[in-house]
Structures are given as C-alpha cells and as structure tokens.
Amino acid sequence: MIKAIRVHDHGGPEVMKLEEVPIGAPGPGQALVRHGAIGLNFIDIYMRSGLYPQTLPFTPGSEGAGVVEAVGPNVTLVAPGDRVAYVAGPGSYAEKRLVEADRLVKLPGSITDEQAAGMMLKGMTARYLLRRTYDVKPGTTILFHAAAGGVGLIACQWAKALGATVIGTAGGPEKVALAKLHGCDHVIDYRSEDFVARVKELTRGEGVDVVYDSVGKDTFSGSLDCLKPLGLFVSFGNASGPIPPFPMALLSQKGSLFATRPTLFTYIAKRADLEETAADLFDVVSSGKVKFDVSFRYPLADAAAAHRELEARKTTGSGILLP
Image (cartoon, rainbow, N blue to C red; front, side, top):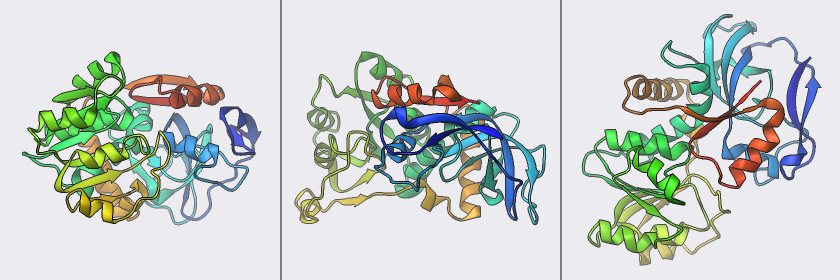
C-alpha cells in the first residue's frame, strides 16, 4: 500500500483526499518509480475541477522525479536505481507510481529531483513553444503573458538567451520585479497598465511577432491586437477561463493572423522528441542560461492548500509536493 491523493468527485480543492491505495508490480513496458518530488501544475487544477474531465476516481498530477525501484518485462530504457523524471497522464500525487518506461528520461547529476519535478512539464512546454511552435531567434519580439509564472520564468530567460526582445505581463510590483530578473526586457503590470497600448508603445506601433498566452479569456482579445500582421497567437492555457468561440474572420480582420492551441503531449509523443526536448531543457539549466529554482513546497498531504494558492494566483515560479 502507498499513500496517494484521490479525487472521487470533480470540484474544489477539498475533493482531494490522502488515502492508502494498493500498487502492483510493474507490467510489461512499465517501471515503478519512488518519487523524490512531485510537480504542481495548473493542468492538475483543470483535471480536478472537471474542466478536463477524468474517469473517477483518479489521482491528479502529471509529473514527478525519483528513483526506479523495479521494471517490468521487456524494459531496457531504464533500470532499478536510475534517477528519472517524467511527464505523463494523471497519477503523480502519490508516494510511488507505475509509469510507462518510454515516458521516463534519465536525470543528469546536475539536476536535482526537486528541480526536475518542478520544471519537466513547464520547461518542456517552454522549449516547444520557443523552438517548435514558433522558432524564436535574434530579432524576434515576443509577448509572454504571466511572465512571473512557472512557465513564464523559464520561457522568458530562454527566449532572451535565443536573442529575442521579451515583453512580459505580470500582476503587481512583486511579480513585475521577478519577471524583470528572469529575462524580460520590459514588463507590463496588467493591473495598472493597458497592456495593448503599452505593447504598441514599446514596439513603435508595429506589434510583436508572437504572443504566448496561458491566461485565456481575459487576455485573448487584447493579445490579437498586440500582433504584427501575419503574427502568431499561441494559446497554451486558460487560467482565467476558456477563450470563447470566435469567428475565423476575426483573424483576417486583424492582419491575417495565425492562431494555434498546442499541447506538450503532442510535441513529445514520439520517444525521440521527448529525449531531444528534455535534453535541451537540462542543457540550458545546467549551463546557467536558464536559472531554475523551486519557489514553494508543500507536503503531499497538503495538496489542497497548494491548489488554493495556485488558483488564487498567490504563487510565483514553480512548486512541488513532497511525499
């Protein structure tokens, strides 16, 4: 038996309960991972609340890091004793879990369990956004909403290292200051400034090449107004609520814009892509181009409190649960 957070009904943080549950031996293609740390992400909230409905009951959590304790038949990618990390389907809010071995990546000595658990999903998200969804390079100008969030702090540093001009948005002086320390050339406080007018001012009326938006409903319309003609709107989350349906003609009216709604799981579906993405992330952190530290920690039993803080937007950076 292991301790794990279980959700029996979709709802608020209170629906998450710490329970003892059985765990079997790894089957073919699987590995048993003992967690050293577990990642906290907004997608966990979407699943818990029912925005992304799950088959009940279930254990939330999409990423973790730890040590392989056992492997099933035909597993050759990892072995007992290997330090590993992963992003997978729900199930990581637990002391241990069974993971498909082809979803595990080995950790270099330069990356701790806490770092890996806090940055795998967010860091690999930043990587695909900057290197594949839009190829950021010297001369690119980007707008990154929630620049002081978990993905934002990684992505803005990474974009700066790639040579981009980075404009971020954040809420309040503390988050603005944090974003400035993590790669942003300019940070707009959306609580006191009109971010569309400020972007136009900063770009001398031209707009940006790409907008990365995990906020959703509250920023969608303004984000389109910040783009250059032929610019790209990238929606990769909806912290303020889903973007409402809109007519495709709106994109032509605002400058023949492009819009996409990518997910990390598509970009790392192939093993080769997973390995390349993770290796690139580990390299930029190990080299110091992207500085990454865990910002907040909660015991596994206090997962509900962690969700309340996330939903209230009281956190900055990346958080973890400790089993």
